[in-house]
Amino acid sequence: MKTTSKIAVFDTTLRDGEQAAGTRLGSRDKITLARQLARLRVDIIEAGFPASSPEDFDAVRKIALEIEGPTICALSRAVASDIEACGRALENAKRPRIHTGIGVSDIHIMGKFKDDKYGKTLAEKKVKMIDQAVEAVKLARSYVDDVQFYAEDAGRSEPLYLYEMLKAVIDAGATVVNIPDTTGYAVPEQYGALIRGICENVPNIARATISVHCHNDLGLAVANSLAGILNGARQVEGTINGIGERAGNAALEEVVMGIRTRADYYTVDTDIEPREFYRTSRMVADMLGMPVPANKAIIGTSAFAHSSGIHVDGFLKDRQTYEIMLPQDVGMLESKVVLTARTGRAGLRSRLEKLGYEISKQELDSVYQRFLAVADKKQEVLDEDLVAIVHDELPPVQQSYKLEYLHSYSGTSAIPTATVRVLVKGKSIEGASTGDGQVDAVYKAIEKVTGASAKLLRYEIRGVTGGAEAQGEVTVHLEAGNLRVMGRGVSTDIIEASAKAYVDGLNRLG
Ligand code: KIV
Ligand code: ZN
Image 1 (tube, rainbow, N blue to C red):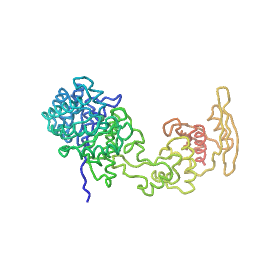
Image 2: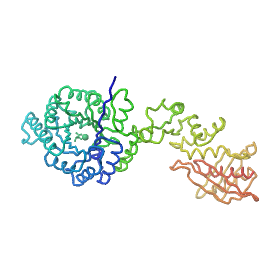
Image 3: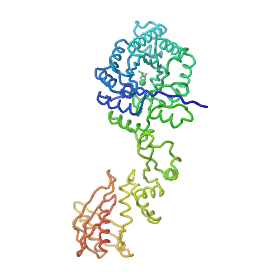
Image 4: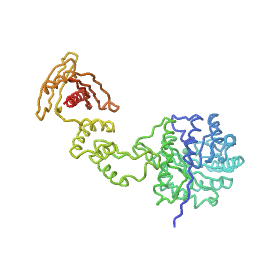
């Protein structure tokens, strides 16, 4: 029988996430987000880098004081003053953790520690790095019992050196060893093998938890994190919406829902409350001014939206045909059928039924044609558009007149003129007229061909939905004898909507 191990979720939205270009969170926003991360039930919140600025120090201190559920972690380089700042900022935390570390790849060691004080050759510098890392972990342990060590750029490091470094820091007291793919260079098979290699070659590894921390430069952060978990990591690091340096970090919502949805494959679980994902994602997007793309996995607005005819038809018969998760599981309201020109009759009928319209097949045909005409002009047909179309296409009154054709023109030096063809009691009649304005010309032409007339008491126009391609709705109030009626017309062309409203009013006058 397979057993399910727990994966600890380490959220670094407030530290690595906040390093995204052009973003900055004030301590007030950080605390609000930390509260939300606690509701999401992450195991560890990396609250900041206290030595980096007084504001970050203050944010970490306040989060440590207030947030009770998760472990509160603070970042430092392997430098005494950084570690001391973490120790002070975390003083009031119920469960404090210091995260310290150093570069382990040849590129990092040679590039960042050029000074001879770190050794003259690469070999000498490598020995010095281990000494410095061990000292840092020991110092951090003098402040807190829980110390996480990061082996920066482990994704490009030489494995034998990495094993040696990890053994030394675990002996020095590290409780968690973080294996960052700092530059997002690794690919899943290779990163998985790196984690497997650590499990098999670091003799004291049983005394520490292995953590995966992947960046997304090749779009592989989530895949690499999952590969690491499959190969023995028991902590995963990432950010909400995948925000972070350059192309960002592993998106936690994707990692966690991957684990949950494919529990059959990963046989691990987390304590996350996934119904908080959507809310958390919106908060992060709003506070950092980084909107979530509509097609973003798990929490994008289109993540549970179906549009093409084949998909909508299948989804409406059985949602499992095109959905592997429920939107409610991640805190979204419901799956959405987006009405576009490709939606098809089944999708249209289902939406009409939801809006309360029971219509015959013949009626559906005429509404569908109108729907297509609107959908060709607009990206998405909204419920308001649909209601307007239905009311326009399926009028509740006897149709004595039906507008068949309209042509009108006007201009600064032209007399407004309109030509109309109207079906009058089954017979098409065409006629033209001029008027004071375009609408007046149209109304006079309609009166001419129908032989009906009414006093126009009121004329109103409004956009049914927003945007340049929105439909316009015209409402007219007409009076004839002692009868007063209202007529409505809808079209993406306001002159046509005006003509339809007038014809609708005349029909109601009988
Ligand atoms: O990507 C990285 O290497 C990091 C470390 C500081 C943990 O963010
Ligand atoms: Zn990072």
